[in-house]
Image 1 (tube, rainbow, N blue to C red):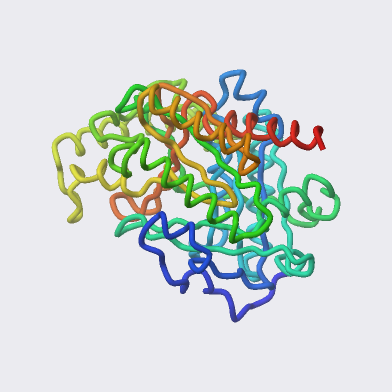
Image 2: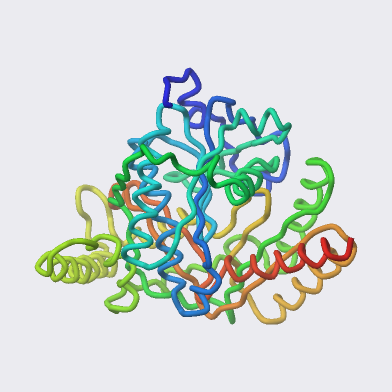
Length: 396
């Protein structure tokens, strides 16, 4: 199934965009090669799980899909997006079989350790192209140490829809042997209280016919959000003095389940101790600006904030914003006006805090952090957006 490709380093070699608003310009995007594949993973019944206070489990599983595929691809730079209750990734053909094994292994752990069903599958980009559905990607430099992928064209959404509609065609073949390595995934931070009055998760999906019209809608909405909430530093949901390592069994449980499934009692006890020891010494080094191997850990929280994805774009604008209730009311009024005019769909979810799930490839050097609103975040915002789309479909 997998073959070598002259396009293997397509994303790695992609020219970077340096400012988030530039992602709302079509000329920032490039078509993903036809010999690549889209991988899709999402948790079935995630809304119900969240309503049962299992959002940390849902969040951890979504991130697990990404780290497992990255490890399977031997850390080749590939584009991906984290959606809270799932993920989408694009890979070259030579990575396909190990990546599918990683997703299959994640799905197995999802059922065994969390009693949650993970829907997984893949779609060849060539099939999207044959159906004239673009799959365009851009790469944003968000800090000196991290980049972030963005997507447009409708290809990711189409791939997800195809998998749901035809799992027997796009699901993972039976001969693929499950094999997932989650090394690098960590979930050891406490909920991060909002630096303002509240933290709000926002989803915006344009309803326009052409990509040009869609990008104009997103540019207009981004301008309005910045007008209401201010620039990134003013609305970022993470703030260094609000960040603290967790010792809570409830908070650490999701990571514990992931790494101790099918292990003996001694290993499980060792892993519980290990998480807390790392949290203790990590907090100690950060609080006292201790340097190890040339890295000053007093800088880590600032680096972590810079290397976070609190705003992203994948055929919709996703943002986690800190602000006031008044700002949120202004934003929702603006979104509702645009919705009533037929320009977009939207969803919001309000919380007092944010959640972090972290990919740690090399401590202090190579790390990336997924941000979502606590208690539902993107997944509950998506429920509102889907309800709007359903109502519009029924009205036609």
